[in-house]
Figure 1: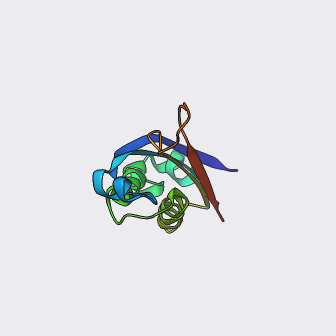
Figure 2: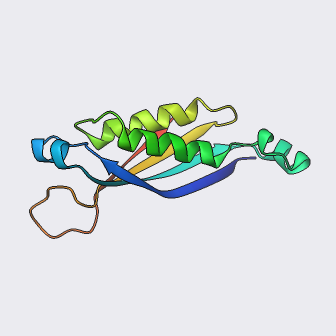
Length: 118
């Protein structure tokens, strides 16, 4: 059985991008995380210690958004995914990083990248 946790819209101001203006001024990024796990023990015990704590996932994403700046959001997605995969009980993870204010010269709504591990 494969169970999933979906966490969407974790956001913060980050300084990621290839242009100096992005690194200097920052912009809003948001992150969605989907992890697979097995909820069987948690269903039996009704105890958060027997599942993946989604608050921990949120903290990982937020810390990465506001933390060390990267040129590429692909790198940001990878860093978040790898840290989430280290959580006990997580068997796979997909991280999507949204950059709605990317410096693109034509009208657009959002740009995002997704990274899935393993």
